[in-house]
Length: 217
Ligand code: HEM
Image (tube, rainbow, N blue to C red; front, side, top):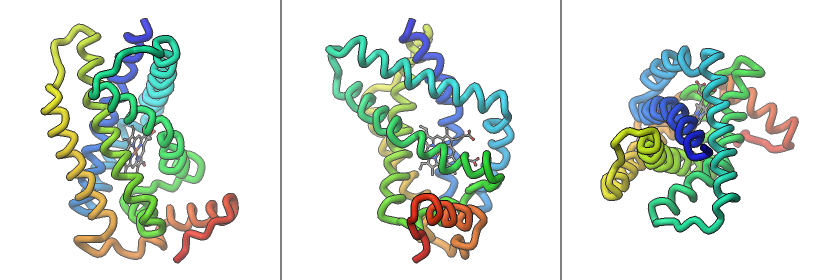
């Protein structure tokens, strides 16, 4: 039963994750492409009933995964499933902060991060945000891809990538994530005065007032 719940909730979340990662990779092509696609996608994933279902699926998926680890502590793990668990734990540790940072701003202040918000975070604290976004993208892709194969199998479909295909697709995704970070980091073109964006002004104020941290160079 727990396995079925995990499979259904993971599949629901994978629909969003696929769109989200494809959108993220478009950052390599510049702000207009990234923001243009994101504003269309937002009408879907921020449509309240869908967003509520998405976040509920995420919470139930995490809880069922943790329960399975507790119920089956001695489960034998293959290298592939060990990486599935490692990437899942990484995502678990960072997903709450990610959603609070990027969605909290639009929920509570009506400020959407978009390309300039991401570019600002990278320009403000590059030593944190380059590795953080890179690992988030790669862990999300590996966990989503491997998990979707397992989930669809459990739901009665004949699917699944071979391990070598999984590794190749994840490596290709890692390259695309790196290229996207290059776009956000201003490696190919000028990203403009991102520190003057609404998201930058808001997060700089919150960082200073709540955490006593200065984000200005
Ligand atoms: C390089 C990697 C990533 C970047 C740069 C990134 C960036 C963003 C941005 C900018 C938003 C706000 C979207 C908007 O305003 O429409 C967002 C939202 C979100 N992200 Fe990510 N993300 C990344 C990876 C991930 C991964 C791997 C996951 C999950 C495993 C994830 C889960 C979410 C969720 C759940 C939301 C909130 C969706 C909503 O309710 O509107 N993200 N992300």
